[in-house]
Image 1 (cartoon, rainbow, N blue to C red):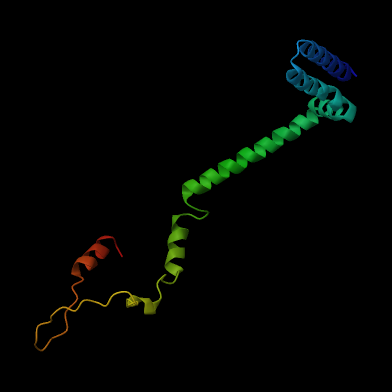
Image 2 (cartoon, rainbow, N blue to C red; image 1 turned 135 degrees about the horizontal axis):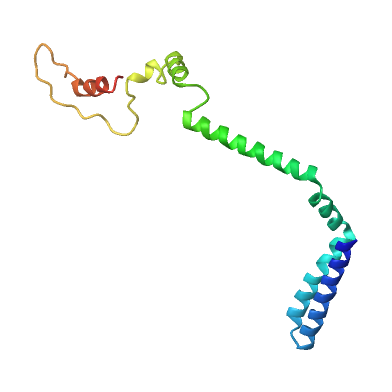
Length: 149
């Protein structure tokens, strides 16, 4: 009941200010002030104000908001810990899972395929018994061994 009276008084004051503004030939501003001043009484008539006051003054509602906030905080903390760990499982579980996975590259993918782009450049090979050029991958093997691959 008190909220209805307060809202009616605010609306009446706003309409009075709008009338004074219109008297000063500022009709656009008077229209905006009148529109804003009708909002509180409209909220009272629709019942929104009674609903809001019922929410604000009930301790069980505030306890519910507190529980929702606690739930959100717990969820964010658990997500942060999970990201810091790097996943759900520990280091041992990740290593065992990585060892159990098959290779990511298919066996037939080890030979490079030549597309329709450029033809490979041919190097002059020495004529002799071993005429095929030897591939020197020793530097690549050293890098892979250095990284434990």
